[in-house]
Amino acid sequence: MTRFLIPIAIGVTLGSLMGYFGQCSSGNCPLTSTWWRGAIYGGVMGLLFAFSTHR
Image (tube, rainbow, N blue to C red):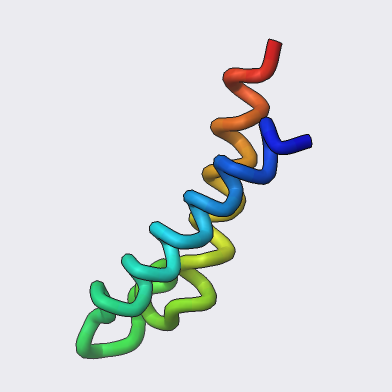
């Protein structure tokens, strides 16, 4: 179970940081317009990474 939770947590953290600090000025960027969208995207990427490395 931790095999999936750790990459998801890392992805959520990195995604939310990217969404918070990398905000575009127009607000039209789908990934970095808000921190929670970045967190969702990062969590999904972390989950996909966990599934790709799962044996």
